[in-house]
Length: 415
Image (cartoon, rainbow, N blue to C red; front, side):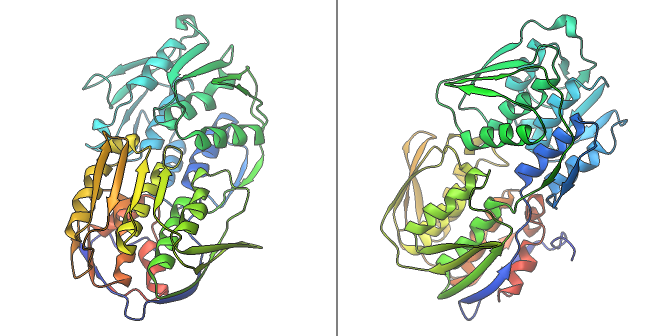
């Protein structure tokens, strides 16, 4: 089956019965896929990687790694790919330009570049200081000033992961001190556990991570289904009149931090049972208002905000500071679109904590702008269970869940 239609300017979506009973296999985790692809590249491409994500971000990573002789790598809009391959390219001995879409050129990379320069990388900015595109020259170990990097713990975990994955190939390894509060900690833990799977040991004590000079060992790895992708099915279960949804490819002891969607949705009307090959979702009563810190799972915030508003439940969402610099300003995007339905997300603490207020929430044909952000499209689409809704630029889902619209059709959504 092909990825979602890239020509449609808008999808008008309805669901007449409100009943959803089906088995779905969401896409493989792009977080796991992108990490193991870089680790495999550092082993010399000798590992067996199974169930890699079909998301555009991961397919872009594969395409670029397959064109190692290409002096220009265009990551499109893939932030993870930009950060991981910047670190990888800084030490693989080949000159390379890293570039991307206009939006990618607005996403900061200075913290990572500064750290890589400290380790001996030779990188220059081609346009705006601190932002892509960048030109990477061959690594010069004699320029290394340190093997001890200090970096703010509340920056994107992708910066930290990029440094961790190249740490064992550095002449003296690397020690990273995370300053202050550590955000998205599960993503860092995921990185270290995947590195261990490929033969690299690490030590994490307090806020200091130490990785000695080591050699990655080729291994076999099967990528789990994506928990971020599962969140939209939790939304479907929450908003449906009746729901019995099985999701395949998940394990209880997941490496992915977004598995906390199980606990969040337990409060918002969805019961989860683990099965031999995944999850079973059914409806249950809402347990009350929600208070949740999304520092470790920011990709769930949009979905949860929409569910809260649609179900008439107030929620206090904190730890949202990273949402300003994602594919779009996700805070503003959520606020703008919720207001179309009579709800709002009100700022409590600047850029950090917000309250979702359901207001007079009603679905009656509103058009949702997606801001070139896949998660905006997927978070708002399940509202079609409550009435007609229009999703603008639906092809944005190709970034992480190319078959999203086809999967919705399987459970009775009509376009």
